[in-house]
Amino acid sequence: MWKYALPITLLFTAAATSATVDINQASVADLDAIKGIGPAVSSRILDERQKGRFKDWGDFIARVKGIGAGNAARFASEGLVIDGLGYQGAAQTAARKAADASPAAVRAKN
Image 1 (cartoon, rainbow, N blue to C red):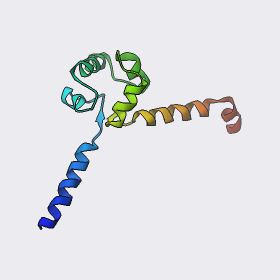
Image 2 (cartoon, rainbow, N blue to C red):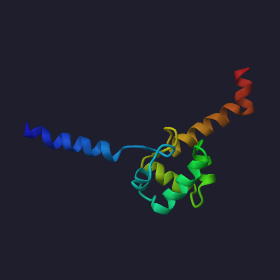
Image 3 (spheres, rainbow, N blue to C red):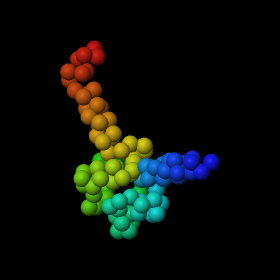
Image 4 (cartoon, one colour):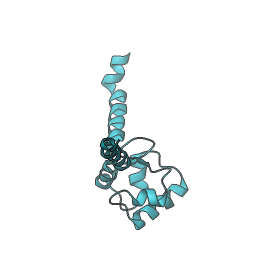
């Protein structure tokens, strides 16, 4: 019985540290748990979120003062997501959409 206690404890610890936090649903405590987000930043995030949901990472960066691409990438690496997408995932999705809309891609589809 006891030989399973350590692995189970480690499993729960790993699950807790890899949890994601969706910015459109996060509480102050959730945001403060993200490394690099303190009370001032979480307050700015929540103030902007009251005006409307964040559509994507670009919207988040544009609306929250003091947040740039570097901070967004760092927050995403700590578990922050917007509608389930991390910053790199959002960038890849945007790149895919841009490639699909390129003239060469449009010609290839026709």
